[in-house]
Every structure is written in C-alpha cells, then in structure tokens.
Length: 618
Image 1 (cartoon, one colour):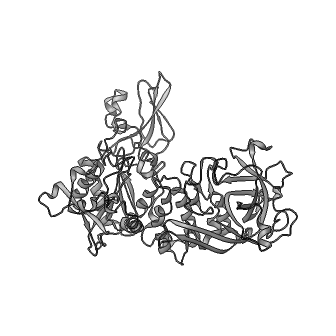
Image 2 (cartoon, rainbow, N blue to C red; image 1 turned 90 degrees about the horizontal axis):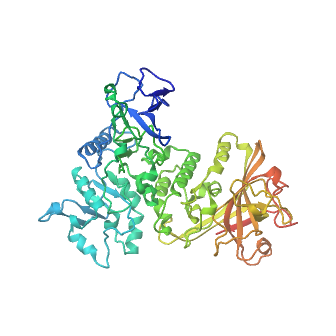
Image 3 (cartoon, one colour; image 1 turned 90 degrees about the vertical axis):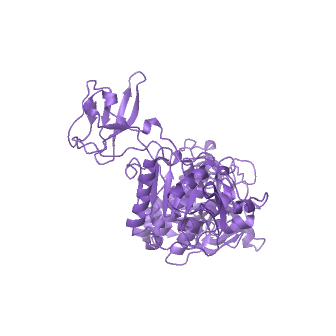
C-alpha cells in the first residue's frame, strides 16, 4: 500500500505494495479515498478509509458506519437524534416546539377511535383544529397509489376507515414510522386531496406550500420510484464497511474500515428527480430522506447523513434550503433575491412532471414564499417577476436541440415555463452572470435597452401562481432583423455543437460572432417548426461595454406570430402584430454588424429609419 500527498502522521504498509494504493487527497474530509487495483482487468475500485474511534494514525478520519437497513433500530435512533436536536437546539432558522399550526383540510388520523385502531387509519376533515402532523413526500410511480376519489366513492370509505393492509407498501411503512415518533396525524397527497375533483385539486394544490411548511417533519421516500416500493431499504454490501485487514491480511489493520464511498447523488434518489418534490423539500422545515443506502437529514440549519460525510461530499445533491427559512429571504437585497430565484429556476427546470401543465403550480409555493418575504411588493407573471422582468427574460435553454414545446400550451413563449427542458440540461441564467456582477460593481458599463410597458397573465383559477390561460408582455425597445441559419449550412459548421445561428443580412454567409441558444428544437414538425432562412427580429435587452471582446449584448430572438415581417403593419395602424420568443442571442457587437449605429436604436427591416417600437410577445 502506498500513499500520495500530505500525511499528518503514521503510515500504512503492506507486503504487496501494489495491492492497495491510498490517495491522500485530503486531510480534512470525513474519509480518505482509496483505490484498489484489480490486476487481471487493470481496473480500480474506488474506496474510502476511516476509523470509528480515534486512531494512532492521526491522518485517518473518524467516521461512522451505516446501519445496513434504513428501517433498523440504529437508523431510527439516528433519525430521532437529528429530529430532537433540531427541535431543541436550532434557534436561528428552524421552528421549535411552538404551538402547532392548523391541520390541513384533510389529514389521516393514525390513532382513530375504532375497535382495532392499530389495524386501520381514518381520513378526517379538519376546519379549525390545531395539532402536530407529518407529511409524506413520495413518487406515485407508473401505477396509481391508493387514492381518494368521488367516482368510485372511496372518499366516504376512507372517512370510515382504511385498513393498513389496503395501503401500498410505502404508505404502510410511513404509518409505522410516524406512529413511532408519536405523531398522530399524517398528510399524503393522494389520500388527502380528492383526485378526480378538479375543484378540490385546484383548491388544495395552492395550499401545498403551507401544508409542507407547517408540518413538524416531512418523511421523504427518496429511494422509492413508486408507492409499492416501500420506505425502507437495505444497504448494498459495497457500502457497508469492513476491516482493511480482510484485504491486507494484517491484524494491525483490523480497526481501519473501508467501503465504497456514499456520494449522495440526487439521480440515485428517484424522488429528487420530480418537480413537485422541489418545493416540498425546500419549504419543509425538516426532511428525513429514506435513501437507497442510508438516511439523510435536512433542516434549515443542518444537513447530515448516517455515514457522516454529507457536509464534505454532497456530489450532485440539490442546493441547500436555508434561504427559505422564515424571514431568511427578507434578509436578501433585491439583486440577491433575483439571483436566488434564477438559481431556483435552473434547478427546478431539470426535474420531471407527470402532467406537463403542472409546471407553474409545482413551484407556486416557493414563488409565494418569495413574494411574502420580499421587502417590496413583487408582481408574479408566468414564473418571472415584474420588478426584474428584463433580466428574468434572459434565460437560455442549455441544449435546445433536446428541448421542446409542451404538447399543450402552458405558458407564454417568453417564460422559461414554455419549454420542456428536463432532458436538455434545463434552463439557466448563466449568460446573465457577468451582467449581474457588472450591475453591482461597474453599473456604468451596463446598458438596459428595453422598458416594460405591460405584463399580463390570465390564470385559470383565482391564483396568479397556478395554471394559466393566456399571457403577454409589451416591451419598448429596438429591433434588428436577421436571418436564421443552420450552422451545418454555413462556414462555421464546426461551432461547438450549436445547431443554429443568425446572419445580419440575406447576402451574408457568415454567422454572427456569438452564440444563438434556441429555446427548443426548431426542426420538429408542427406549429413551432422554424426553417433555415427565416427572417427573425432580434430585440436587444442588455449590453456590456469595456470588455476584452468589445461590446457584448443579449437579444431575444423572436418570430412573428402570424403574418411575416409585421413591424411595418403596426406602424401603418393595421392589425396588431405580436411576436413569440424562440431563442436568446449572445453577441459580440464589434464583429456582428447586427447593430452598428447607436446604443439606443437599431435597424428595423432593410433601409428603414431607426426607431423604438412597442413589441408585444405572447
């Protein structure tokens, strides 16, 4: 065994020095990384090394073993210790044992008054009652879980009582665990919302944020892809630690433990890939994840796991939730809050939805929380904020060729919610990062080229945070016309995987300096299909001067919704012309020729006067 890197003390030797190689990459983590060579195949198995008690080799970190089964007594005791510690010692962000909140409209009573209370639970209606309750966050899966419906009338049956044996396995395990915490009431969406009543679903879905926020704990079936898979999991053998002596054959290594590292990756937890779970996790004060190998704890002030390395090795785990603690968002400046929202949208857009129309309802709780905590009143429009609308409009789809418009309209084209991008790397605001930094540090080098005249959305219900019927914005700005080209048809066909660009005139064969980020795959047949050679208006949003590359600008790339070229028609007083967004252009102005006259006006069409126009986008 050989070591590489800094040592704080001691050494480990082996008669066959090639059998195990230790890479001392860190002396501050919870475990060291070990590579064991497999000679026959010349492969390496990545391991971690630690001790459970302080060792004479000071280099070896002290860590903990996982129980081997997340439903074990050891795992239960660990969960109780996290839960109790949060309730009693976390005073800054986490709510303590304050008087309980009002129960949700419907809850499951786990201790009903019946001849056999341990064998059944009961759906209860609550109006003014207050009590502590838990929530379950779970994947429904391919098969529908047990549901409360009017047709057939399971609603009446569930109010009389639900036999434990009739519950899917995940629900059964949750009832057992909730009872063990001495919590009487439990909220599960499929049982506490009438699933075939659009009215009840609309009313209760907008309360979900409040329901999860007021729960004393949320139990997350993070490893279960469906309701039949259960809450508890056995740890795979590779992640259960064993003595290093089993590998080296030396008794002196008996106290040193090795195992495959637990990486805490969100993709390994099916629940964390679902969009609705985003706000369930973010708004719950305390979440106990039942993962595939171990328990993971999250609250507003802490995050921990059974293996003890969560704070050191979070891998692809979602961002922390501390800023959604009560009053925490209110501590942020408006610029910081905008940046936080952009990050939240980027994370959320990676997640999947069973019903595509839920894209705005499934993040509505986080949006409401943000609105409530803001220092100034904030109007919400289709996933964006009126106060920061020009900046909020500058989102980009990561890999547009893998994105698409939803099968049914769910948001106006200027909203990130108008594209399905979970398989395309999501949407993000990476192109605004430098812009936002300049706004804070050197505002004179940043110019905003549009002004918001109007921003309207028509909700399907009374809530502006839910599903929408319609929406539009009107911006005052300057348009430049360009031709859309496929890069494989241009002289820059090798451009790093970007499928489309624009040229400044029909005679130009050279794409503009910069990158066009399509919102979706233009080549798909249907109402959103766009062909090469299409004349597209580009609305200049922001520019940054004094950069190494000259002036850098962001444009919304639009297309006329209806008749082509419509600016002339609007100026002549004919029918109103509206546009729809199809992409975002990041351009270096020095080389493009797209705008070559002034900072505040651009060419509209060919040979026309430079004017500012009102641009309506739907």
